Image 1: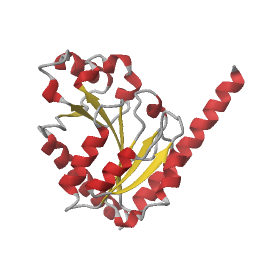
Image 2: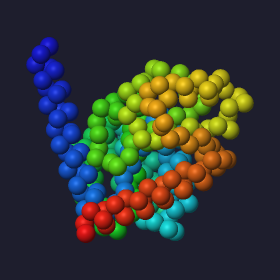
Image 3: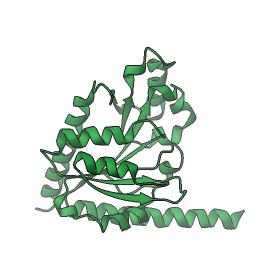
Length: 227
C-alpha cells in the first residue's frame, strides 16, 4: 500500500512541475489560458464555439481539445475559426500537464491571445491535475441536477469561475438554483458565476466581457512585469 501511495505522489509531483513549466511558456508568449472542465454533455464545446465566433474578430484564439477518442470536438473548434489541436487520451479520464506540453509544440503561441483547453468530460480526475493555465473554469448544466457541488466538492472548490449552462431548461428539469448556489458558496465563497444558455445565448455577453477583460489584464500584467 505504501509503495502505491509513493508512486501516486511522484506522478502528482511531476505533473505540478510540468504545470509550472507550462505557465512559464504561457507567460513568455503573453497568452491567457483557461482549463475548461465539465461532465460529458454539459456544453464545453458549444461554449467554445460561441466564444470563438464572438471574439475571433478581436483576439486570436487556439484550442487544445482532450477526449478519450475521435477529433469531433477539435473539428468543431476549427470550423468555428480557431487553431485546434486534438489530444486523444486513449481511455484516460483527464488531461495532464505533460500532454499539454506536447500539444503546445503544434501551436505558434506568439500568435495567440487566448488558449482554451477543453478537458476530458469528468468531474473527478481533472481536479487533481493542474495544467499550468491561468484560470480553471467549470461548466455545470441544469439537467445534471443541483446536487453536484455536494457530490463533487474537490472540483467546485478548485475553480476560478463557474458557468451554469442550459438555464433555458429550468422550467423542465428539477434544479433548485438557490440550493445549488448555496453548495457552491460553502465550497468556494464569492465564486464568480455566469448563468447562461448556449442554445439561446442568454447570459453569453457577460461571459464574453469577462474573457475580454481577463485577456487584456493578463497582457497588461505581463507588460508591467517585463518593464
